[in-house]
Length: 377
Ligand SMILES: Cc1cc2nc3c(=O)[nH]c(=O)nc-3n(C[C@H](O)[C@H](O)[C@H](O)COP(=O)(O)OP(=O)(O)OC[C@H]3O[C@@H](n4cnc5c(N)ncnc54)[C@H](O)[C@@H]3O)c2cc1C
Image (cartoon, rainbow, N blue to C red):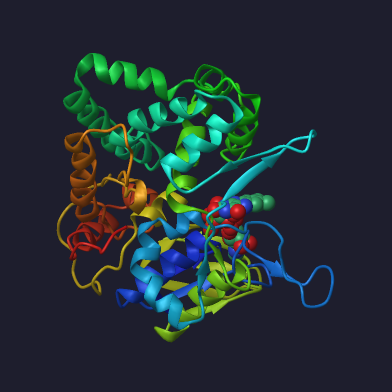
């Protein structure tokens, strides 16, 4: 039975990022992937004319590039050939009459673009930013936590402290607005609706679903601030670079390894091989776990209880850059908050569900959570 500190089942971006961060912290990791490629929903292939590469599923990586794992691994991955390209024209919608509407990279440019379709819609965009940006940490906090958890409650408390009881109530109400209602309230032009509504579908919500309006704002702001980064050579380059880095650190990555059983101290694959996990077994790492993961110190003898729900990180560029309507004071405070959170948003737990069930894992996690703060995004 081969033994590793941690076994990660699945080589999607979350599993690979988890493994790479653990490997960076000195863990001996093993990634087992049942497909014959690494990357999960990231796959680049020659599908059409010779010389052309296509991303079969996922292609664009704004959330990855804006996240803490990339902040910690970016330089290492660049050494292994990962280079991101971006654009000033991240997304657009074409209409049957030949018109087009663009989402651009600055608040001013977007206001001007929306005004082009209906004078006054630019004001709607700036008003949205004026409300969204000062509380962007709540937006990403809500995205990155279980609402019915200690951290969910802490987030609610923070909202009440910052906004007051009524303000927090209003904010919660706005969180629940549907995309249709928000778009119709904020913009007259149907081209503005057509530009923003499709992005809601990326979140798995429909335009009439509760909270879809807020999700549309989250994505729209993320696109404005982060653009649409894509690896030169296709999305697969991210998975390739992560695998190369893990192997460079002494880790193991295997394809064709279908995990059928997960035991407390290891896993068994379909061909009957048992692989031991000395420190931790990790089921498919969730996006949330990856967002929180950071390189731990090499584990020794953990002792104390973990903080189970540390604050999630916030994409780096969401502190306002140049919103013209906001006062200097309000422009400064989100940046300060973000800076504090960058130091806070750290833990090495790869799968907190495992931790909850296993006291020894909990003790172990606390030690990891006390390692030095990440250079978070
Ligand atoms: C069509 C499509 C387009 C998308 N476009 C984008 C985009 O442009 N930008 C973006 O940010 N996101 C996009 N996404 C979403 C993104 O792909 C996912 O958020 C991301 O892939 C999730 O990564 P993951 O590691 O959680 O899971 P996955 O990518 O699903 O990887 C899970 C891996 O685990 C493996 N696995 C599962 N069970 C076992 C087992 N028992 N044994 C061994 N291996 C196992 C699977 O084979 C798989 O490789 C898109 C998704 C789809 C489907």
